[in-house]
Length: 518
Image 1 (cartoon, rainbow, N blue to C red):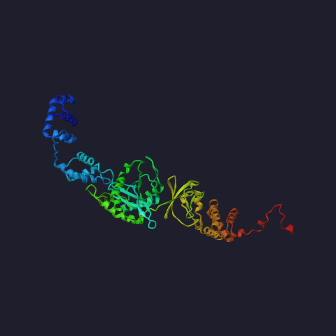
Image 2: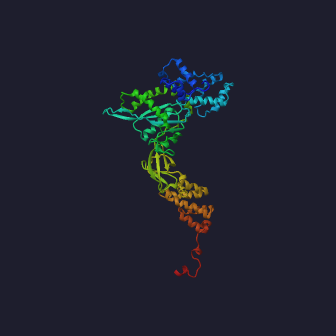
Image 3: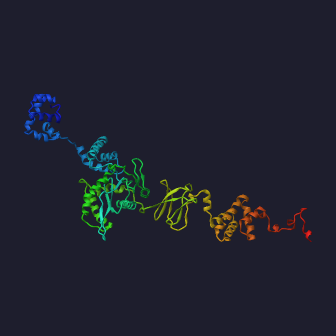
């Protein structure tokens, strides 16, 4: 009996049979336990003075101590006592971003050279974490994720004129590591209210976690999926502005956002209850009442340890990414078709914005706010411009144009004067004078382009002479330059250009000559 103690089930069978009137021989046959062993357990039970009903109410642990005695206390040596006292602090340090068990051991052994080696240190730490895992979640790294959701129960504001009770939504955000919580009331869960709540939440935290974990809300997720959810374009733009990622939970998987689910239950108990039987005539008034209650909630200690606010300040604040210089502004959305001139029209301003010429004829999605206009094709951004409210004007990026369009789009008075001056001052002056003779400078752009093109045919030197000769004539057109060059008049001096009789009356038997008319 001493070497192989009976299981508690066997002992309960023996006691039950004994109180039913069976003898030790019969009990031995029924249980397969030696008769002397049965007698020994019955004798020990009688010495306790307990009744059978008392024994039935004992747990297996209690019954074991009754027959086998309490377990021998585990002796802790000095090293184990020191490490046990350090484990709560070590486990908290492990939650810091980038912290590892190896680094923690190195810090430990530097302070306690006679302490445990690395493998034993990690074993004790793992045992401690496993004991605590039922109530604490060490998998959440500092600054890694914020979980967001709406509470199921609404709060209410009262219309001061009609007395009607209007339900409002309650938005909640919880940081994974510290459980630091944000809460506010909004009129709806629509895109504008949802995005505004997320922006104010990040401003409340004073930084940005590396991922936002929403439920499959319509303002956040356009199409839910276990493997490849489609994020709402506006919310995706919000995430890009703040340099974070969107990681929606899988459909029907509440455990993936258990932190915020738990926060909702706690908020019902510790914030909602203080708002009952109070009347609020505006959303602003309700949120004013929520703020001090939320502060008290975050200051409440967790399991007798630090409060959410203390954990946030110690572990998480420094791990958050900085907020951008400017807050996010909600983007309006419209669908447009890229015109043949590679532009789309933003109808609200009647202004035109360029897109890459490869998308001519395609339908694109235009997102815009007070500052900028972004153009997407199949969820990929293909263009971005600063918003311009001037009507019937064009905002064009040269990179968006085809080669031929890019050349024409650069035409201007200064462009042609500059290109002509690169050849010589005379050519630049001639082109300037040509454009000045037109009611509008743009009417002379093609003529200027044609004149500059002639330099590729005849060379710069001949074009310079042709422009000088045309300037002497006082004629500023493309045809006169072409005529001078085709007749080689640019190669003649002014005296040689004076036509004599031989030039006017070439010798030929079919020419009558001036004598015929005398």
